Length: 317
Length: 258
Image (cartoon, rainbow over all chains, first blue to last red; front, side, top):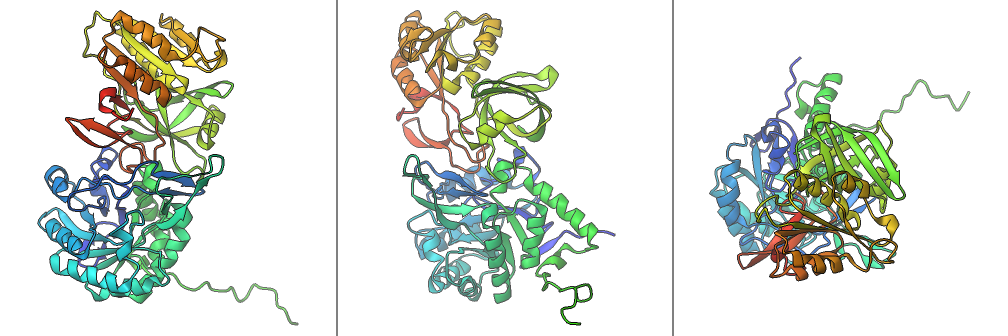
């Protein structure tokens, strides 16, 4: 029985559902030292903006139980430098490249989308309106459905490439921002970015990271992310890409069952650069074990737990 | 570099220090490089730990590290037993330059605290090339002096300094450096606490090129998480560089904050 690992995210075909998450794989060239990028479904580049950014001062990262809090602050070399120095090296990577981008105003978002439009090796754009670590841009655009609509619509006009919107879970109802992005023309939704979080060193009585508050990622947020993916996939018609603490094949399958068409591996790369390949192999074995021929049939396939009816002891005689 | 499981074949402990010997596929490294080491310890702590290479025996497929048990991760590494699996990603980062100065001049290696292991690795490489090595090691007390036997084996007699005077000079190791700089070294290499590096950089200014290895908490160790950055000045322009990728070894002149 042949297994088809291919999935579609809107009109984009991925050879398998496993991608690398933005902010966790650099400009992907670092990952090529460990494996061939073409083995993956795709990869999302570190968030780019016009002119680049030096990011936040260190310390930028701390560990929490099963997770990490980061406040990198979107350090990046800038769109111009990326297109000149990095993109040419990635043209032969043989995998779907998604360029994550952001701005500090609606106009800057649209200008960034337009600028990235010109690069042929970029298959899709992922609009970052969910970074909790920059003062303007990022999450400021992601929590108000009206602003989500406005910035998505502006970027929609600016590019003909598939437009993905990366959502923040830091809202009362994520389906509202999801629907706003869909209405404004998004082709897919990446769910989710990090949760705002904080950690304090009690001995030093000091915040563990420079900006005090940062974004929580890793296995600790996985159940929260699975729910967000489930809620969003029920609320919109466009595909959802699941992100949030995926470190094993079972995590990836769980996100697909919740409603994701593809998944992104992020924090797990830090402790195990080979995690995406191990996840892919595990998903293959899972499909074989469950007689799955098309991995895409897993998307949204979770059903209610069936109570075994015959083998429970009867309460009444 | 590669990421693969290795097996612990020996763990020689002395107090809070443990010298770990790992066996597996070893990719040749340069002194100053490091590995991210992570045992099979579940989700906590989440990340591997950056540990400098102490030495490697490529023919035996072995690489050695010295770990001091201070935090959650290093305590687990310290407690590992032979046969245990360690996931090792490396060798990572830049190493110390091994040439670029007058070969007739001696070089000074300055090591403090857990900065000693990479300097011992550097000493072993430099001694192979016949360079004159002045090795200065500083520690709090006699008990914290490290790897003296390894240095002796390679014929290097270290100049010692301890805070309490229990061995060698009573005081800080950079006081030894100030004295040894009179021998007009071709280069000075330093690894240890930030205060030591700062003092070394100042003393070397205008006298000898000084290369320092920076310590940092790291997320990934291979350049993607951008958590271990430091400000580096090159050609008049200051920008963040990754300690794990462009470093951990930097020319002290490029670190104006030091």
